[in-house]
Amino acid sequence: MAADKNNRTGRLWFNAKGDAETETYVITLWPYRSLSLKGFRIFMAVLASLMSLIATGFFLLGAWPVIGFLGAEILIVWFAFKMNYRAGQLVEKVEITPAYVQITRTNWRGNETQTCLDSPWVHAELLEEQEHRPKLFLRAHAQQMEIGSFMPPVEKNALAKALNDALMRVRYDKGAPA
Image 1 (spheres, rainbow, N blue to C red):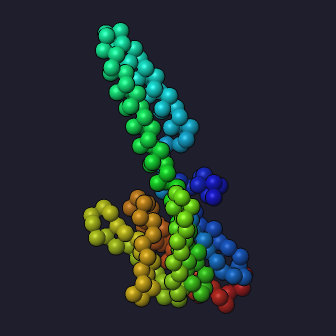
Image 2: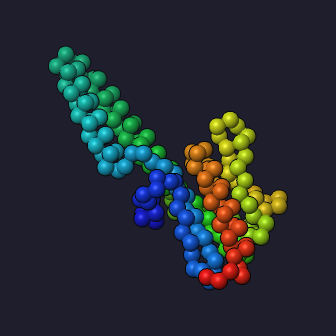
Image 3: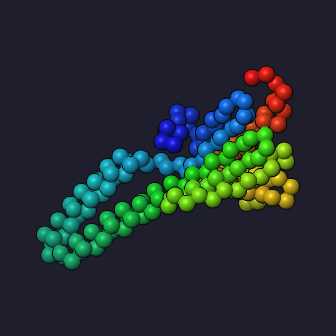
């Protein structure tokens, strides 16, 4: 999965065509994180250095109790980033076969939930209920499943097209030679 996250296309999803005989497409989705782990470490080092300089100034002025608050500020920023990175470990995998579409969600704890939809009736649909916040659904009759809720709106449009293309290929390429 690490190789998927480091793709060079800049997309927040990765499409891998499976075996030609089984006609399987797997699309993996993950949240975008603009700050890498190395960048986070550099940011925290710069923040800690800056807070140390400020703390030294307050100490020299005789306001030494402020040092504790500056230390608490560093811990709060560190905790907020850690929680954000933990939430960013969500992964959604959409497996498209001629018989079914399986959506597997893995949260930051590693717990998986799976939903299966009948493939002949599934289609991707982009609904714009709120301005600038479209929702992407996989629908099969009355069943629907929202996917990619963490993705930016620009990526959802391209993903909906890729999903519908993959669904059409597995439905209509059955008789085509590989």
